[in-house]
Length: 400
Image 1 (cartoon, rainbow, N blue to C red):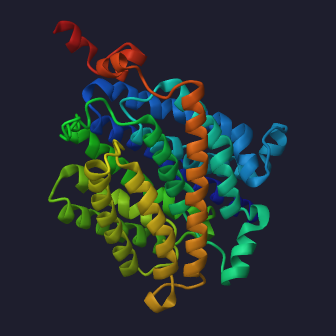
Image 2: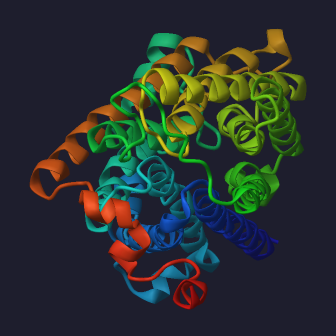
Image 3: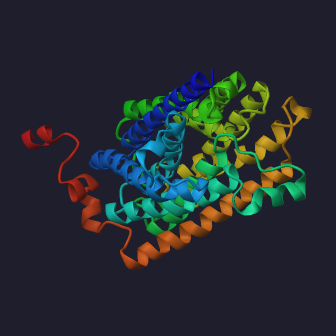
């Protein structure tokens, strides 16, 4: 029976890893559909290469930083317990690699390829695993300190803060230091729209992310006997809440409509194992409002050229999700309890502060040492031709 349990857990986590791996194609198509046609190839290439860099760095360094487990041992030791530690690494790698995928959307259309790959290696090898280890592996005694202050540990079941807020708040310094796309904000005060190139691809990316998210959330249990139907239904309700709120507030704009479910899912990750489904619906709905409102504000008022709106979507909705777990996870609002509002606030703000500090330090250093941005000529030509020497429809372009 123990062997059967071990084998089932390996299969369970492996299926979760595959579902979340598929989400990275969602990141790629969401970015492809949002950027202009001359940057579509770059969107696809960045996500795949960033994932590959993440895989190598997380295997060699990052997983050990977070969990103290090294894979630099014999294969006979790696296959102990049917290789459970290996598939757990695969599953958690897909979370870690989501960080550079999130950042990619914010800095699209004007960022150089090489410096971002270096940033990916540092983030996945060190920045992300340090906070991951604090939250999910009791590293450095910070969870004990939070529990001593508030009576409960910081709770983040599937990564509203650990993954999404960290990614979004790392992206903000990168976007600010990089500057807006050429001609996005004109001297006369006019704002150039830079509209999406392909709404169907944008929608495809959103759908792939939405479907894969049920692996992201439900399989965060990491063992088949801990699987929870509550997590699945809470994810579903938050997705619906985010979609409906974004549709209403965004006045049927397809970009808002298809990012709405993602906002809801980002927010519900932290407390998806604690909330009542109606609480999850409220959390998702609020996240949809946050995304639409803050995307509009940052783009039009503050003139922060965050191309895919990753700071509002992942940074702010993730922060809301971390705090919301302490509100809607309480028994007073139908939750299971065992969580504290103040613990959630402290843990969430620690994550945000860590990401901001590391983001400004890392991207500031890269900007001084190497430069972050394409030249004006390269940006005008487009990242596809400037970096990859080919456009998204080469045969049509040759014929033309």
